[in-house]
Image 1 (cartoon, rainbow, N blue to C red):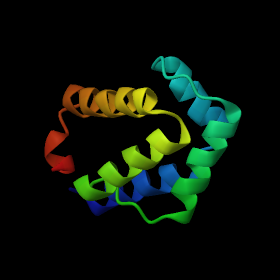
Image 2: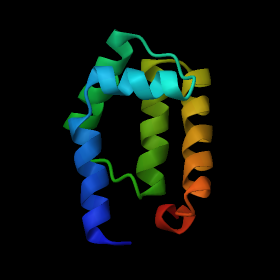
Image 3: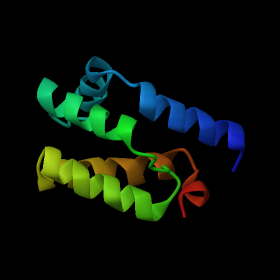
Image 4: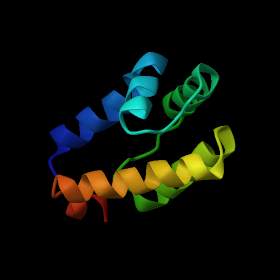
Length: 94
């Protein structure tokens, strides 16, 4: 995986706004309140999660379930798997 792409993904996770996150949620039918979006973003900004690391993604989805609920976290995880398959980048996330 290209370091440039990895850096871009990490930067986007650190710079996303609550409004953007809610907009993506709406786009993919994942309901988030402003308070939840702010809590998710706060968590992403203060941690050094590697989106390519399976261990870090599991940690993130567990935290997402705490912030929102288990159904939302599962929905987000299913969407993640669907999108990486759709774009043919599954090998980046092993």
